[in-house]
Every structure is written in C-alpha cells, then in structure tokens.
Length: 362
Image (cartoon, rainbow, N blue to C red; front, side):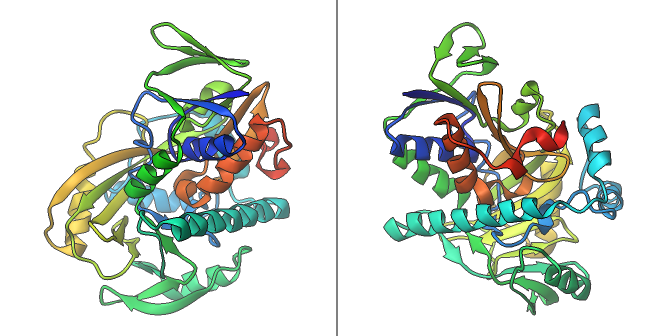
C-alpha cells in the first residue's frame, strides 16, 4: 500500500511515523523542508488543559482587540466563511464528547512522547511545571478548577510575580523533535514541491507531475481550506536564543513563551491572523522578550502558521476519498502524535472520531 501525505509539519510527520509502522510505503510532499513550518512552536505541551485554544469564549474578541491595540497582534487575512462559523460557535460550550475526544488526544500523545524519550531523549523532553504570569492568577485558578480536562494547578512565583502553575506540563525542543522524527522516518520519500490539487488518490504538483497512491492524507494546515475545511492561519514566530531563564513560563501580558532547553532558550510569540509573507512583527516579539529577559543574542528564527478552526478544536476526517488532519491551533505539538495516529487510521480505512469530524461545520 502507498500513501501520499501533503504537508510535512508535525501532523504530517507523525502520520508518516505511524503509517511506516504498518508497513506502508509513504511519500511526504511539502514545498519547504520537513518540519520547517512547525519549528516555530515553543514546545510547551499542555495535555490536560485547553485554555490556550479557547477562542470562542465571549471575552476572547475583546482580549484579541486589546492585543491589537497594544501592537501585539494583527489581522491581515480574512476568510468570511471562517468568520461566519466563528460567530455561530462564539459563546457556546463545546459538547461533552468533544472534551472526551480532547482528553483522549492528550493521554495518547503523552504516552507517545514518553515512549520516544525513554528510547532516547535526544529532544530535551522534560516533565516540569509551566508558570503563567501577567494574568489575574486567582481568576485563572478558579477557571482551571472548572476545566473539563481537570488540570492540576497551583499558585507560585516566577519572574518576581505571582503565577498560575500548571503542574502537568511537558517541554520539548521542537527543533530537536523534528530531527528525531526524521530519523524515525528513514525510507520515507520526501518530495520538495508545492501541491496544487488533490483529487481522489492523486496529488497534482505545481509545475507539472502527479503522485498517485492508494490513499492521500492532507496534513498541510491552512492549505486544507481548499478542501472546504474552515481553517485560518494564526502566525507566530519562534527564536532560538542564548537568553537565560530558569523556568518554563509564559508572560501573557507580553504575549511570549520562554522555554529553557539544553542548548538554547526558545522564545516565541504573536498570534496574528496573517497568511502573508510579511514577517516584520517578529521584531515586536524580540522587543517584548527583552523587556522580560534582558538583552540576548538570536541564533535563528522560524515562522509558523498555526491552523485554527473556528472553535479551536482539530478536524480529523475524510472529505471524499481524502483524509484530512488540521486545526490544532496552538496545541499542534501537544496533540501531534494522537492526530497523526488518527490520520493514519483513516488512510488505512479505519473509523475516525465523530467529535472531531467536519460534521460540526456543515
């Protein structure tokens, strides 16, 4: 059996990971280097908390407007269908089966990361608390206690401020995790081309050429909109730096995540509704980070376009003959293993998870 995966980000790489374990011949098509679109992520994994993806709560539009007014977010890409679906979901509590599905995603992904780290921890896997500062800690604590995923939280201190402490967090290096996945994917064919059209079991490449397979998986984030999935690109920037930090933390008032790792400290920020190639807001991330960490040197920068559905939950479904996985938003690495497993199952003809299907947008 042969499967072509369109998209070489975290979801596509984990899909390939599970397919080759089933003895499948796999080709991954991406216009960039494998994993390059996912390296920008901070690498803070939150398996039992969905708060960072809750964009449909009634207070979120006001919060996002505040971010825009202080120059920490911007809108450059409009999709009226996405906005229409967002308005329909805004202020509504997700159904119980959605929370059960997300809980299962987290449990599976945690087990997979632990398994990879136990075999060889070459991607800085560490289970340690995540500190959140720049928030109303007491209000956040109460909200966390009402969370359907029941995260373990406490109150502590970070950066000289009171902090909400999320005790179930894990950190990884997304750069090193990408390298590890590529080592696991020996034998996979990587095609560095842009996909133009997916039609049934064929992928037509820009400039000519067709890849044929027994099944196709689209794991290309924002590109999935071409198949009718309401998904928007929320751009973020990630920097490898020599900054000094003792704890894994997020300063929500500055809009930055800081992840200290063995060889560098990852600094990330921005949540721009922006599918453009204009990356000038990256300088604002550095400005905000230096307000917290002091001066530091930048090793390199990566850019990522987080694919977000209107309700913040991922989509894993079949659209016609094509399996699609997208929409994990800011929890792409957190749920990456589980989403890859589900996408691989769909490609193999197995049943998906109803709660994560496209039915909620039809």
